[in-house]
Image 1 (cartoon, rainbow, N blue to C red):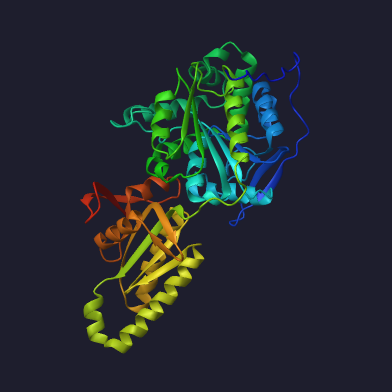
Image 2 (cartoon, rainbow, N blue to C red; image 1 turned 90 degrees about the horizontal axis):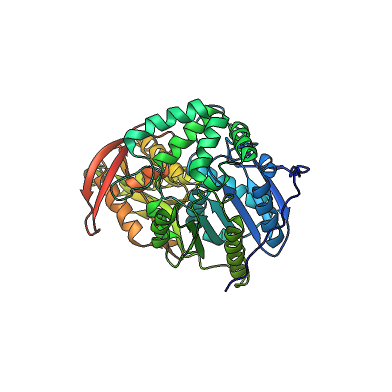
Length: 466
């Protein structure tokens, strides 16, 4: 029988506020991300809770403060506010940050905190971002903890959790009208933390926390981004040690759905009805997280195998190349294609990608963010016009096997098939790409469901339109 973890209780009326040690990390695009490092120990731990945060104000909630102190006694605890939230920079225009921008925020914070690898502990929607990070950057991830995670916010016949599309607009209106009010805070606690439904101090903290994390419009924008995002295809590409936690009367079924799709993950169901980790038996939650951290920190400190990564692949192909080559002649055509490849290489590097190969008269490039890959594809499409050429482009996000400088795997074949279906000057993407760029400002036109030669199943494709 496992021992019970008992956290020291706070004295009645104790003020959990503390002297702030907030720091700021500057990302490559100039955004300042607020972060804080507390505690110490042999392993780095990154904690991200919910979908709205203010890392300074979180210390004012006694149960949450106890959780952070406990984790800080296990290792070096790193916390941060997503861009546009809490103490981090707000964008010039109100818009959600694309998932790859938030991945950059986390990577920048890890660098600023001198953390080479960390255990990522994501509570609820914090687990969504960490899942994609663990798949994309396994070399920076020692382990992954997902508390009551969801793969998406939108309900569907094969995903009964979340909000039905017909109810979503009404939810957004309630969110906009009630954000930061005690009434909305009490309603959320009644649904997500019923064991603390009579805790007026908790309700007061939550209402203030909402106001400090962002405005009502910020909350609606961010909620819509979560609703438009689906990380289901990402889950099978996670290959770091993973612990999925949930309570039996809350999100266990949805969490099991997530765990079943992550290779080698371990699922632990705790008793209780509270969705909030800081309601109900929080000690049991911390004990499971702490035990997992000890297990992965005891493992070898050598770098993990990183030959399998989540990446976005870009394929391009010159339209009408055979006729154009015949008209120009071999020497002139070869010179033209070499100029195209060199300019494409420069554009790929500008968008922080890697040119993997030149395939005939096209290219294969790899990116760690789908938004950058789309922007690069459009830049290539526009650039070749100056050379008198026209290209088609296709993109897919999936797991790739790194073999030397080459990429292998089913994702490569899918990307090539998508590219082959694109029209002249068209950028065609798989649904996986579309679902991961919510908040990046792209518009898409549905191109329907297709069978891809040699690829199992049916694939819905979209053309980038704006």
